[in-house]
Structure formats: C-alpha cells, structure tokens
Length: 247
Length: 84
Image 1 (tube, chains in turn orange, yellow):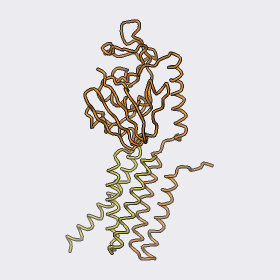
Image 2 (cartoon, one colour):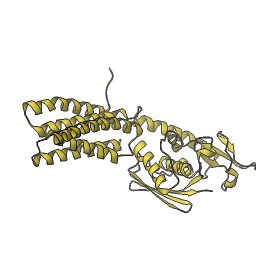
Image 3 (tube, rainbow over the protein chains, first blue to last red):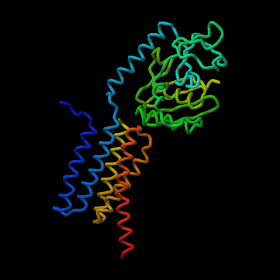
Image 4 (cartoon, rainbow over the protein chains, first blue to last red):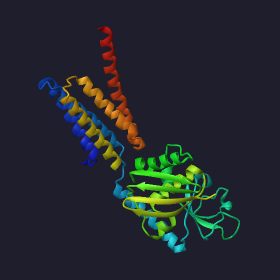
C-alpha cells in the first residue's frame, strides 16, 4: 500500500474536503455568512497546499544530503591525493563548453590571460602553453543548479542579487535572503539564514561551501568573467562571502 | 521547505484576520468575503516571486480560477448597478 507522507497533501486534502462539506451546511442549515466564508477560505487554502505538495522534490532532503556529501567527499579525496590547496577559479559557461565549472590550478599564481580560449571539457585540463599550466576542472553544486535556471542573469548588482535570491531562497530553500555589494573587482555577498555554512575542511578551503560555490557560479555567469572565493565566514546564521572578479 | 511554510502561514493568518475583522464589522455579503480572500491570495502569491517554478505554475493556475470567480462577481455587480 502506498503511504502518503507529504504533509502539504494531507493538509490540502483535509482543508479542501472539510471546507467543501462545511460550506453548504453553514450557508443553508446554519444560515451564517461568516462561517460560509471561513469554509470557502479553507477550500482555497487547501487547494493552495495541494499545489505546493506537487512542487515538492521527488527525493527527500536526507537523500539529497547523502548524494551531495558523497560527491563532495569524492572531490575532496581527489584534491587531497593531488595535494591541491589553491583556491578554485569559477569559470563561466562560455569558457567551459556550456557549463560553468571550477578550475583548481596546480600552481599558486595563475596568469588569467591564458584562459581566454575555451578550455576542453576534461577533468585534467591545460589552460596555457607552458607545461605547468595545468589544472583540474570540477563540477560544483552551483554548476549543476544553473543548468535549469529560467531567468536571465544580468551583470548589474541588482540582477546578480535577484538571481542569487531566486536560486538560494526560492529554488533551493538554502537561505532566507541575500544581499550583494559590488565594489570594483570585489563582490561582497551576505547570505542570511544560511543552512549550509562554512567548515574548515580541505574541500571548502579549495572550492568554498556549497552556498559560496553557488554564489560564485552565479556571479561568474552574470559577469562572464572568472571569479574566485577570497574569503568566507559564518556567524549567527549569516554567511559572509567575498568574491574577487578576475579579468 | 521553509519558503512554502512561510507562504502558507502568511495566507492562513491573513485570510483568518480578514474574515474575523469583516465579521466584527457586521459584513453579511458572501461576495465581499470571497473578493477579499481572493485579493489576499493574489497579493501574497505575487509577493512570493521566489517560489520554485513548479510551485509558481500550480499557484498561477489556482490564481487564474480565483480571478475568474472574482471577475464573475464584478460583472454581476456591474449588471446589477446598470439595471437598477
């Protein structure tokens, strides 16, 4: 027997049925307009709840967390095995064949002039002519999420903030609100009510937390330029992320 | 699912408050109650622009039906005013 566990579905069905039964009773038998109005409101809220029930993801948050952690641990193992400690550079989709990705260079100082051309879609990539111009290119949580984004991400601070709020608050429900300040080549992002915060582990030191990764991907995609996470901190439910736009 | 919970909570509180206030004001016209509830639904749904696309599609369908009901009431009221 299929068990219904979706609370929105249970609430929606309960309110809709109760409201539909109570409305004619209140109107014809009790002859009370306010009670009839409450019954109609219950039906409306019930249908709203049913609409939200259909929009819930097919997989549970617990399953999503397991999948996310598995992917992160695999990437972390790869980074540790290669001894890579450099900060990742987030590349826009125009430089990575249609999908934004993060590039972790093998050497500390990287000349960005060499990443003007499209980089081949492989794990280990060469971005310049010198033998040491090597890096590994990985897909981050932000790269995957942006594929299905149905809004245009513009280059102005307001448009960047709107896109980040849309993804983090509306699509992923990872934060309560996002504030963006753009100054020269620095972007400061404050994520309020962040549910996935920064931890001092190898993966986060290289690629940033999942929230910072999403924020960096949106910023690089909006500006069409590579972006690096310079600083990330978490305090009292608020993530403070500082991005550097590389050009 | 905090965005969904917040949206539902605001709608429930707003419609309950509106119904209670109208009852205490002695309102006895069902169309007024319905119209106010529809307006509350439409305004709150419009304010929650960041809900995910699937939820917005379903809510738009409900909003369309409710707006249809609202327009029927408006047309009936206009006919009533014009014919009197």
